[in-house]
Length: 296
Image (cartoon, rainbow, N blue to C red; front, side, top):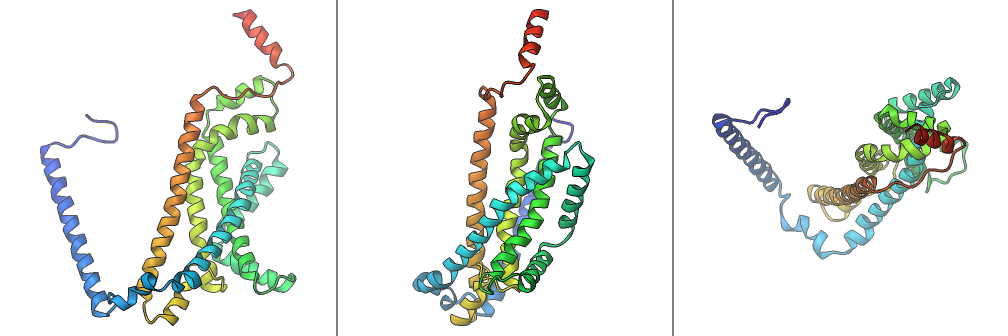
């Protein structure tokens, strides 16, 4: 069976694909064998490099879990602030009023164009020069500020694209019922656009979790990845083992986030198949409906 974008492979193509797959797996196995051999030559696979993560609970209670807590705190604060701010900016970009649309668009494009690490560094400098925030909390404030400014701008574009992807008839029908622009956006367009936007939003939330590591690199924020230096200093030169364990924690954390988001998306899609909640009664809506019935 064929489609516009895909032709069903014939017997020769299937054999060729099998050969390509086997060749790729063999090449991958050779690369893995070479990497493991190089690590073994450098004694990075020795048991004493990995045993602290299994035998010594202090590695977790003193370094990894506190670092994970700081990562989750910074990410949670950034998500809670960036989501509504990004939604407001996205709606602002869709405004019919030029005096709203143009300034909001300038703000979004400005913060999207600046790397998030620079935003964190600027925020840290501003907090140091113009506020009384203590040095203990300044890295957290700077990280959250940089993440919020950048990701809210990206989320604004996601919201704008999600609303514009809906059929134009959705908004026209709401206007025909006498709904105002704000009511149309709140009750008609945004609820339908959520399922369209959700995959992109989840990807951005994963980015927020990972970008907290930038604060640990240059601002002294004691997040998960920065604990690598402390563990290596106290348990020998086990950098590879530490980074592998930290990477696995990040993978598990982001997998949990994407799994929860996928379940939420499935529930939203199932909810769209059920009867929708009645919209607030609008002036003139009853007259429109009665005229439609009498005309039929």
